[in-house]
Length: 191
Image 1 (cartoon, rainbow, N blue to C red):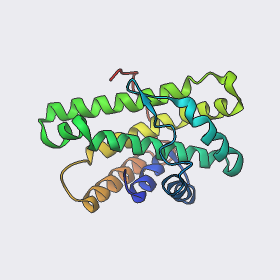
Image 2: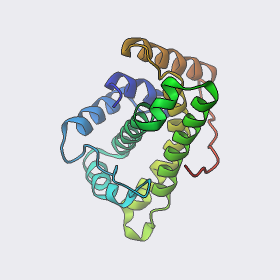
Image 3: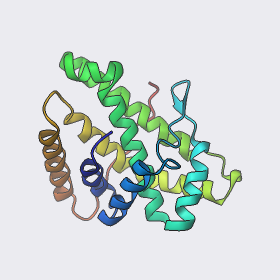
Image 4: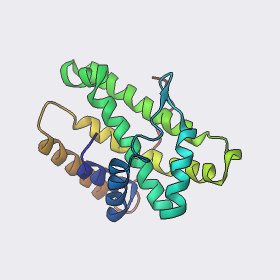
């Protein structure tokens, strides 16, 4: 999982307040009720309905920004796991530039599919399903942009160097779009 500092840096792209992402980092990583919830993977896909209980708990007790921060945290953790582990991590760290690009593209496809699955939870489940769907739609473009940055800064170098690279790239992108990042969605991709 990425450091809390990485979570905080990437949350800037989604305009999540620092104090909210700080709270979410601690809530998710130190709370057994919240840690890894929703990251149940069946046939290569998350089962998003599992997020509904956590979403309701967070939304009712802490509000929409907290729900946004918790979902962002979970998705960045998932992306980092894919980027650093298994075949994708190996391809990114040890293969040709072409294979690296392919691996990053496939990871982005997986993350995009997670958002699609969340956005397609039948809203008849509850009001929280509607809210979670809205939050996912809002988070998708900026979180995918964060995953691209994370991927471009993943490599065999040390943690501090990677964190500095991520922070410099986020600040560069925010600086080039200070009011609105105007990020575009990726086309749907099957991994």
